[in-house]
Length: 552
Image (cartoon, rainbow, N blue to C red; front, side, top):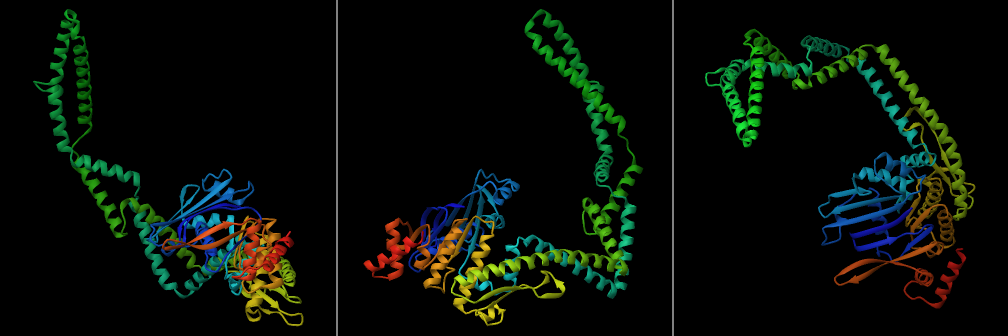
């Protein structure tokens, strides 16, 4: 669950450090006070897209940090372990947005991408925004919600991948049928290029050895000359150093017997004599191996020229030649398959069968979940002043299937008992849509794995007794997980286990947002304000107290 949210220089917030509790919490205040700003800040910590406009005017950057407490069984613990990000029972998400628009993310102190923040954020919190109801009018959103509710999102992605592969193979077969001549020419060229490369027999390791040998033979004369000069100086010349050092070393041995202070010099000269002797032996061995071999040098030059010529032909470097050959071989295999319509048709049929098998499993899961979700939402709608209404998820078949499976997903609703079921977008008014959408969100949230649920003014368009029912639904949901709700409705706020008030305050020339944790008396005053507006009377206070008393 969300334990702490720290915000600095974000929109109209200069600095806030908020500690959250479990259960159902209400965030209330006047319109424009900054209630939704807190939700927006949390959304950025969870990986939402960042814009420079969120940085408070005159500041260099906005800084948001959200700390979550993790249960040992939380999928977030597994995700953190898989990504080598130590958790120790906590997950700290941080987002820094600079005034230039650049943003940085961190997970438990380690740099993270926005995609990584979204991945872990999906396991920690679920935000239902003000436009969530309208999203339910889109068929793709309806399908995604049904699959997520049934735990079939991964299977849906697998089905989409299998469908893409099936279509790719179908297009390849059609291409082969219409482009047989051009494919034959391309295949002939690929065969010739492969033969040429195979004849070259290029091996990267041998290439480096060839270059080294060619450099050595190309400079053989100067190498031999230099070695001869070195041998003359060290051991073979009339004034060679090695014999002279040996004579001096022998003389110093005799003198050291007279004066012990020469022992150190004796040891150094003896060592120098040994090293000169070893150097001379090494130089002789090198001289004996190195020969002037014009024929071998010409052979190496020809080999290098052939390899470099082939590399230029394929617009690459010699080191990349094996990769070029592998690509050619793969393309040739593909063209061979393309030139065999029967093989292509077989592969297409196999891909179609794999798609239908996976899509069939998805269809069975959707049918089961659709029935359960339809019944649950219908029951919730009865509580939300939609007596006699029905909600049903239809699954009309799609001929030959699509990337999303073998059926569409359609949310149908009948607002009254005697009305037929029709698509949600064509039936629901604004108020009805809010209530239906809220019922769907509450029901699906009960099955969600995330520990924290945030509802940002999703109760817009409802009021009266319906608002009280909504509050009770959220309170019941708060017994199972942490629920935060931004609301203008006193009936909803009164059902919360705890409540914060968000207000604007003048600070010099700035208007800043401030958050107050309300005690029992503070809640009475705030709910009375929500009930009575500007002028709060004793009657509205008693009404607020009654509402809070009935929430238990």
